[in-house]
Image (cartoon, rainbow over the protein chains, first blue to last red):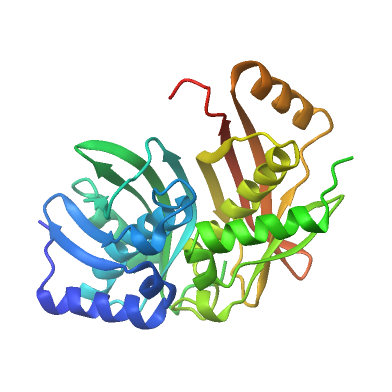
Length: 158
Length: 158
């Protein structure tokens, strides 16, 4: 069972705030981590659009960061000096988001993290596909799938 | 041949700045409009990430807005009181973006705009898929495809 300590979540919080400054403009915060996954949150106000709902670009940014943060926590907790980058993603905007919102990256399936870490250990580079979503009133409003690549300094460049 | 006047581009500029406030944090600007398409730009500094390259979420936001702006200009120029929203998108991050960047929404193929406007006129709602990209040193660094929906007030809700 994957768990992270308060210190590890604090390290993620500092990394997001310091290394991805636009996350401060978005108002990004770490909402929770539990057996369902990692949840980031953002207020509607700075992310509002022409229809008084959340701007698609902000929704995508918070979902992209939810997946990125999940992988960042995994490699940080394993003390692996690796960089996490997103390779590609697909997003479906199913309903407008009308309030402050949360983006939840789902916990990878059992065994996926172990296979991912084994590949990273063997090859210095590994990929993981993560699913994330934003729900409102119990219904999925935005569905996101992203493929991330993690690479240690010793791996060959792409 | 699709063309827009300076006044129409100024109206787009004001709309982006006033109705999508996060675009100000991103540093979004309209760079150009010509036969190749509509180009938006953003500086690297506010959009930087942990690798000192452009944050994927910012790249996606500027590409999403490049497509949105193309459609906004088309319906504004036709004086159609319609709202433009994005339905879904796919993005591939092929290379890091290391400098200030431009997102270019390609001009739709001949006939596509006319078919789109005819559908909008008949049904009050129409979809258009747009391609956009960010290039650096002549090579595509980020490739984006987005499907947008335009709806007039008289159309039935989704």
